[in-house]
Image (cartoon, rainbow, N blue to C red; front, side, top):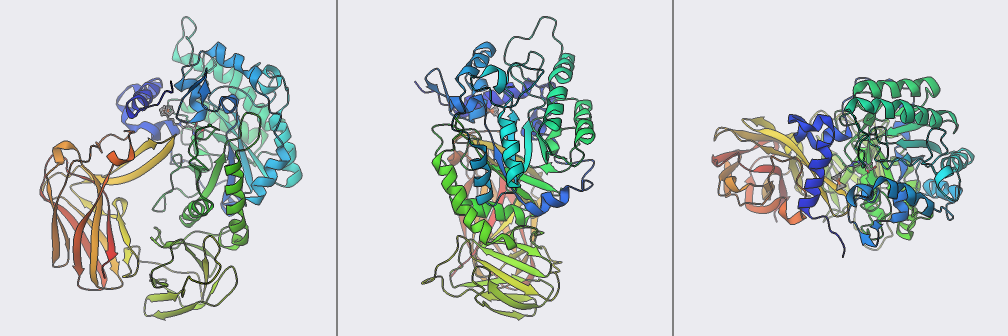
Amino acid sequence: MNKYHTPFTVCAAVVSLLLSFPAFASAEKEKGMDEMWGEEKLSTTGQHPGLKWFEDDKYAMFIHWGLYSEMGGVWKGETYYGIGEWIMHMAEIPVDEYKAYAKNFNPDKFDATELVKLAKAAGMKTIVITAKHHEGFAMFDSEVSDFTVTKATPSKRDLMKELADACEAEGMRLGFYYSQNQDWTEPYGGNYKGRRPQGYTPADFNIYFQEKVVPQVTELLTNYGPISIIWFDTPGGMDRKYSAKLMELVQKYQPDCLVNSRIGGGYGDYVSLGDMHIPAIRPKADVWETVDTTNNSWSYAWYDQNWKSPKTICERLVRVAARGGSYMLNVGPKGDGSLPENAVETLEKSGEWVQSHGEAIYGTSGSPFDQGFSWGDLTSKGNDLYLHVFDWPADGQLRLADLGVKVTAAEFLHDSAAVGFTQDGSILEVNLGSQVGRDWPLIPVVKLKLYAPAQVTEQATQIDGLTPATLLAKMASLKGCKVRERRWMEKFGEWKHDYFVQDWKSENAKATWDINVLDAGEYLVSIEYSCENEAAGSEWTLTCGDESMTFVTYESGFDPSKSFQPGPPRERNFKVDLGVLEIPEGGLQQLEITPRNLKGKGIGLVSIRLEPYR
Ligand code: H79
């Protein structure tokens, strides 16, 4: 029988996992994944000279490959649905059995050069690979452990060396993922999966750290040529002094190498956001990345067919670049080193677009707007703006306000065909024309040439009268209520994320959005929210100028006060049409929501959508 990790069991697993870290055992439990993944704020950001290439390159390949890849989600004939590299944890595999499994690992189809060529074809500039994941198995030769590909498997190949050589030959940057805190097969490692030795105390983590982590990280920094990134993960609960020591090692042996924020303790050169988090609003961090997957699970899992389409991959890359970040996209080879066909196809197809639109990706500095648009997003370079059109607007028209600078020319990037535009006062209208009867790239890009770099001073959400606009929780000014954040897991390890306004204190509380109305008129209003039992039946008023509308809320079965509550998607948020609202005037306006009859802590308001009503 297959074992499905129901919402409840995943939730229980989360709690037990978090409790296994000292820091989670107390009041800090609520912090959940933020705590486990580590800080998103750095004490030393923007200093390292390597951040220049990191920000320019924008796009990297992540690879999860280890013993778990050979299992592919199956242990002793039973499938464990979840993230593949967590199978030891999910199937509760005893340490000795897990270690003995290494003899089945046979990377006979692994061709490092082919892999590097695929990354190149995809438009990626760096490869970061799991040298050691939480399982504790080294995919490289190590003097301090026998649990390595060179000693515990029949092939004896140092796979990291093969990849390092191929990267060197092909001009690809190389980075190593190293799980510094969790090591499930080391008796003193974080979150060890066996019985701790007698007399064990948490301070014994030091033994594991000095005897395995320090020498292995040193090996990775000294035996494989220039390393561009050491990518650490899940520092939650680890003392800051260990993070400091790791930073010291990197600075000593490879001062040019970058380190991500999951080293812990506020150290690191740039911030890794939460797994798979494509931020809707420009994050505070100066230099940051999003790590994402081509399907759901990081490592190969036979059942995971949730492949992102080539267009979706390009869109996610653009959304990240538009918010000023870098994107690292994962593939999970099978145990034998070959990649699932779908991963190869989707990377090759998306790569054609990335290569032919590189001008609008590499070396760009994001959109002048803090948030994206429903039709697409922007990147910029010098005086030029790139409009990435994901969804062709209904009548081929796009409107943008307050660029602050005159546009001198507009053309499609792929064929340099001129694009019509008018700029009247602060409003730019771009006429894309008809989508019919022409061949388009996956995402058509309009290049706008400006007299000077755009100078956007107004970040109010634009209501353009042509495409739907979304007012996000994080963009609201709040009185007597709060913005909170939650993450949850869907399908086979797909992390979801949102912000919502909640904890409404009284009927005087309100959330207010500044909106920039480019076209007065009627809009269909819908909201996305979650609502606990006790808040069901509460009444709310939405107001814009003299116009208002009232709505009643229904229970959604999701408790927004819990940062972590896996479950099927239908149980999360409701999306409800409220009706048609007249916005009588153009220009800067405010839209406000306030409880009319508050129950409990009120709804968890995720967003308000305004769609032109015609
Ligand atoms: O390497 C990838 C993941 O294995 C790692 N980070 C990315 C880059 C990662 N470490 N921890 N997590 C991700 C989150 C872990 C989530 C869990 Fe669960 C939820 C662990 C326990 C509950 C899912 C469900 C995995 C096991 C049960």
